[in-house]
Length: 125
Image (cartoon, rainbow, N blue to C red; front, side):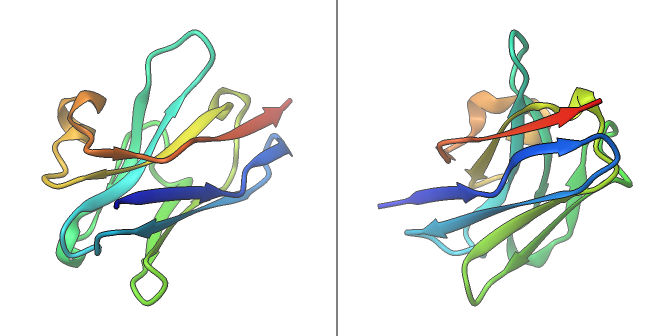
């Protein structure tokens, strides 16, 4: 059974940093691209970025490029989202996601194969 379990998040001031973790089970990072989406209240779910399977590098949306970093620890089967220089507009529920092709970050979240439960990040001004 595939599971994605997020941790981290919470309330942080603008300009601050937060790290999210996503512990995966039931598959390996060689089989799936793994990354993050987010959904602000009243808005569509949007991609943040992902790590390509087989260690093929990372992809980030323009809105987070240079501020957010996605990394993985294969031994722990865990993916991390390090968020720096946070802005109030980064406030959202952040979801870990796995996609066998990686296409969901380019074509839309409906292509995601597995979702985590989500974790709230609130950035105060």
